[in-house]
Amino acid sequence: MTPYTHHIQVGWGDCDPARIAYTARLPWFALEAINGWWADALGEVAGWYHMEMDRGTGTPFVSMSMDFRAPVTPRHILDCACWPTRLGTTSITFRVEGRQAGTLCFEGEFTCVFVDAPSFTKQPPPEDIRALVEARIP
Image 1 (tube, rainbow, N blue to C red):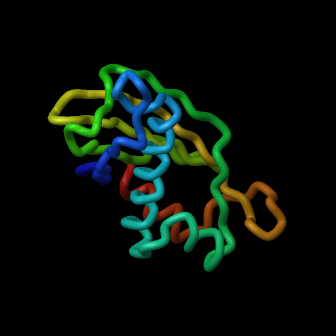
Image 2 (cartoon, helix red, strand yellow; image 1 turned 135 degrees about the horizontal axis):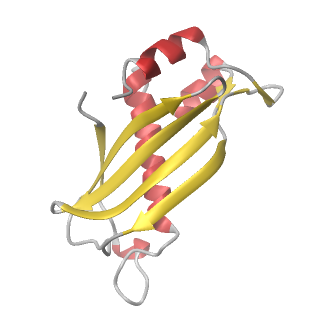
């Protein structure tokens, strides 16, 4: 299966005095890609917002790990490939790889836990979400 790719136009405001993206923006870009993955998978423009507000299912993060490989700049579109790598009883792990002009800039693993949004209690993913995620795990 081809991973979902989220395209980000890195702006001047995303950068520090060294003229590369602030370190803190890289997880932000990865989370934008994961939100885009959810929107694409669910067929909803709103991604996490739709899941939380309309479906009552939240997915707060419990772990993030990133490795930085090359600087991110405004010179090229940042292509963030994103896909789920693991679906547990109550959690999901995503891999995100950010590239500019074919160069790997960062890669990371991001794990969320499924919760009932109103009570913020851990729960298994709804069956339809489990099915769509399982179909997208390589």
